[in-house]
Length: 314
Image (cartoon, rainbow, N blue to C red; front, top):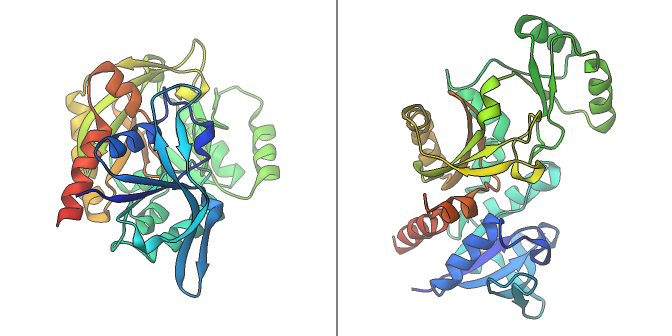
């Protein structure tokens, strides 16, 4: 049975169809005969208790530079859709949180992927802290003295914005690096959120593995290898995608978090693994599916739509 699918995403005009996971998810849905309708998060409204979206019907094709055709603008009651994919990129700010509150009003009658209440309650860098033994030594704080104490104990550390994404603002600070004060001052000037400080994992030079899980089941991985002398391996920051197999430790980490992912209705999740450690659990708009499919290791889009269709069929 064809499904009506709305996609909440950044502007479809600007995506790179060769790397974008959302494009792959949408193209797979279209191939299966599902109808697509696209809108940006700022076009979502709450009107007298109803969640409305202003968007356009969408048709896709895998042609670089000519990858989409959209119909005319229309306002739709979001509860009329069978499925909503919430796929806009972070930052995980108040606008993002408000969108989860809106979509929570229509879920699960309309299946929102991922469950918006649990997306709100599972920020990537905080959610992972609830699983004992999976992370490297980690501190989350806005207290400069606590950060200095942590670096004194662990030496080489990595500093990250708590609610950032895509590798933005991630820096390595060696034990004798004099720039910590300046970085904390810059962070305070930009916002009031806490930061994440983790012990540096030397294994990052061999790559930061992205593993995709569908309803708690790991289906494949891609390794993202940083450029020489870089700490950030994100593909958007110059990392290189390399085919990789899941190790026994990878499967162990997935098994630890799987029951909680299933309980929360987090159907499409990407975890980041460096060496033996999990550093993040991505539930907002996980990426890496295009690279996995290209390497022939997994088809995450097909696996996700198989599961969505099972759920909608009851």
